[in-house]
Image 1: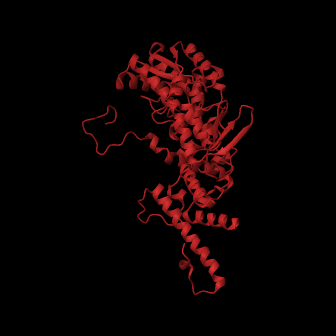
Image 2: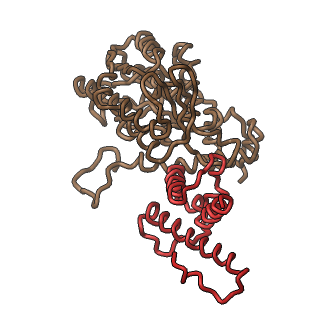
Image 3: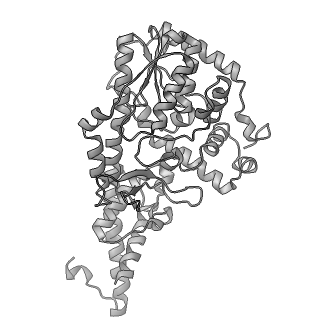
Length: 108
Length: 335
């Protein structure tokens, strides 16, 4: 990402949350693209919001979760423990993005 | 949801004599008239389902019109062959032992499977044994994620969560077993002009516990409408040998001993049986909890597992899909 993308008129102290927000949006966008490509086969048609539950929508089963976990693990170079693979972290685009952000933050 | 009866495990009690009588009539009509075949081939695994299927076929068609095939391979339990032979003998039916091990080896079944396991356990190799397991989903709201459990030649046990490509690789390779066995059953069916009997019970059939074009393939499935518990009741009525009745259900697919609960259902079969019945009949989870050792929350989880399996295994039930209906092909019995 270029330096220009972080230009802001806000005070210096406010740039951290903005960066976090940017990172979250970026991550959510990447997860969303992966989900649309792999589970909606590119045909999104506005039917998936970032807060939609994959389980409620019948979008992703256990095999799908395995695929998502593999993608996230590789893409963001994070370790994911078995006990972390629960709907609280994996049942929507937003939840996954929040989970990844938390993992990345705890690594720094 | 309100039900008009008091829910208990007794709901699965059946009048075995009447159920067998209906199945006999159906088999006769199906095999002899609709399918126009002279008899039935049954693959015997030494388990309760194939034993009951064979016994009902004998009642329906006569012992001279039922042919049993036992198909051991290098990783199947010795009990499977021994009990299959015992059943064929007790029913007085013709049978054959077909060792499918060399065919599986030449297809690369074992080597491909081992290669897939090495993606998560790199040291896995010759002399190791393995099985695939699921977590106990009653205890938490986790996903049904498969792990491989492997035993080294020195007895050391290793467990690793499967990645998606490792899981698919293991399943694709082990599915050779069910598909080769079915190929062998159809060989005998073709040479005898018989139909092939499928052996799934309702739990397996509804929850997609079968391999498409493997054990899921058959010309008729005479116990697919019966819950596992009911198949046991029929087994006792039909005089299936006690050792088969008492044998714990197993997939007999992996080299380490593995129960069906571990591989697929992840909850005890009797419990799932009762929950499937309850869900099919709109019974409130609170009533099911009162009749079992499960909490209301656990019953809800089982209902969720059942729904999830019904959705994710629909593909297994679908016949080849056509762009347009081919009008001139009219299937008997479907009009």
